[in-house]
Image 1 (cartoon, rainbow, N blue to C red):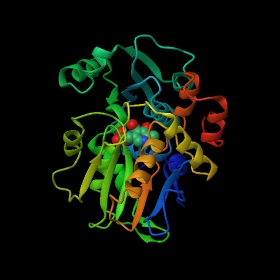
Image 2 (tube, rainbow, N blue to C red):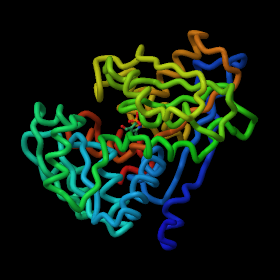
Image 3 (spheres, rainbow, N blue to C red):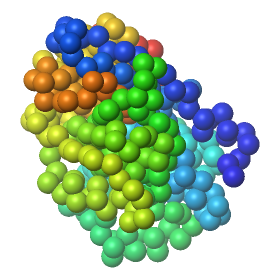
Image 4 (spheres, rainbow, N blue to C red):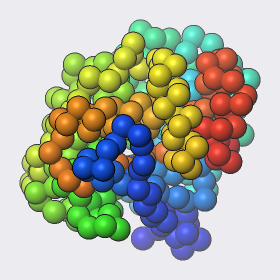
Length: 321
Ligand SMILES: Cc1ncc(COP(=O)(O)O)c(C=O)c1O
């Protein structure tokens, strides 16, 4: 059982928005955007679902906290820092960077919530899933539970199964989509027990990673029934976290409609979905798009001068910190 004072925090409010876009004609399928609000930007979207059982396990096992992995602007690290602080757990992060930058808004956010940050150069970071490397870290942190990058474990994916993402206000969706990076969210949709078996699932990749399909398969428990799924990598563009003016303009258009997305995850994936619909590549008449959060990342894009202050304000609504 979760600590009673945390119940509010762990019960996200679900909201649905119908997407309107000039590319989508009248005959096109409906696209519904599903959002999860918790009152915390960092722990919204897929983060709250991937972390809820993971951190509950740490509490049950009477761990002092967790250690995990992420990039210097990682949404996952921000979420872990905040969730652990709220639950009275400690948090430690191995950050993919040569040198920790205390002005980096994501790392500053994490540090403010008590997270211990440890720099890991790129080649060491590549070992983050290796058994021997993890065993060494576990020896270094005997009181902490290891949480993989992105919170993408079997337990993390199980949390995605708590909500019926196909249940739009207009009826059942034949297809549920989400942005895909480490694969835990997609794995959780594939095995989600609340969604109809014939609802299909589509992961819109935001990273170039040929091992992704195999990693997703590893996150599907053997005894679980699975639904039909696909990964689409046609709209990754120049790579993870890279975006062009067309994509940024799309995010700006969305913000004008009160749909707040950023160009690294949700904006890139929603853009991909709109293009696939326009190209008539999807057969479902009603589509659900799981908004996986991540607006805290806009601060980091602004910090690196990849978006302007005006874009930061526009794309985040009031939600970037
Ligand atoms: C905002 C956002 N959307 C989507 C994803 C992708 O989720 P997953 O890593 O479970 O594939 C992430 C995490 O990396 C994220 O931060």
